[in-house]
Image (cartoon, rainbow, N blue to C red; front, side):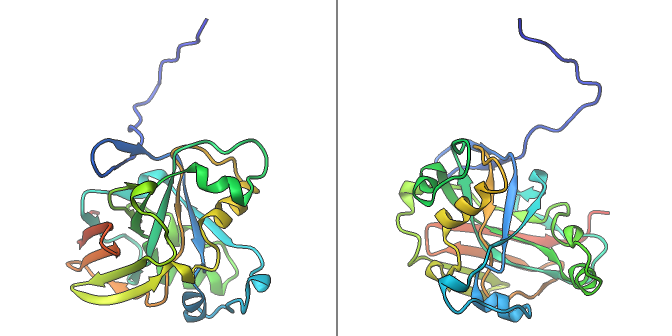
Length: 241
């Protein structure tokens, strides 16, 4: 017999990201990769590896699933005067990983599709936490901190390495890099994540940002693209509170 449950409080439905051509992708978790482009690592004051052998391990953090924004309007967050943009490739997982550590060769089979997104960051809060040696979750995992464009099935994207990830703010190019500049590519990141978490269908992975992060203000418009196959258009609106 299947047990039935009566919820004692109303809860919002899972966050969903539209898929090009129809349908939606229900989001379970959002994993993010820090310092995955050498030029961004350097601009943030960190050392960048000279070779693959020097990479160490990736830096991971998380955002809540309901941080996703797909409507185009992104409210300027509270408690900050320094909201920064970080354009990123978004990887959507369509299968559960097998039990145990995922091999690099197995990783690609988990990928449903790709999108582009913004890892919005309250940079002043992050800097203050870093200066005190404290965690900086509140700088990354706040409401509406993960604007995301439509997802496109992986087969429609083809090889990722030569694709160019870009961000324009008010028409001005702010960030741009090809994906062959990733320190850890998608299969490698999924392999590393599987050592720490049980990866499941519905997970999103934000893959890290290239150099050029900078401040956003209410009224700014953002256009994030991966060549001409993925796009995100959004506008920063005044704080909602």
